[in-house]
Length: 222
Image (cartoon, rainbow, N blue to C red):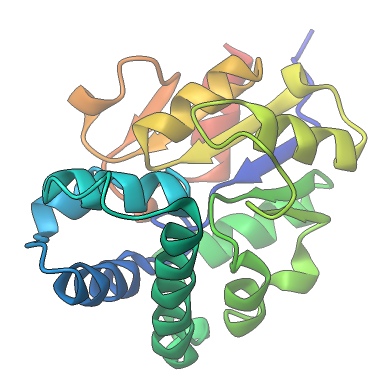
């Protein structure tokens, strides 16, 4: 008997589109404001984690984690987000990563539910700009959950809102913290990125254009 797939639940950044560059530029501008050097390599450490956790990591880089009150840190995080929102005004459907629009349309045509589980607080804005929002049955972003990835809350919330059993869901991620969240939610994990980074994923693709509905379903049903 074939295993049922109720839903596919996607991460946003690095899977459907790549706003990582905009995040990097916004964080770098903020780091410069507080006299901390912030490189692309440093930015890799922020993949899949929340805005406040990202800020803490940046402040720690400069040994400044104890220099600001919680209120000041919240103001810094808000300032970063304002800059990021200015930058993402440029996002359009042409920014959808290779193969993803086709994959999403195929999943929809096959009758599965579609969910988004994003660490971003701007997921609705970005999905609107990509012209994908109406294809998704639910979008869960950082505003709705208390625990960030690798905690499974964002994926479990998406499954709950879709009205499906997590064990019948396939999650798609590009961050180690995200894959850990998918596995902790009891879902099948598809990772996009270097194979050596994703030892806990059920299936790994090096790029988004390699991910096809048939390949994922065949592996899931094995």
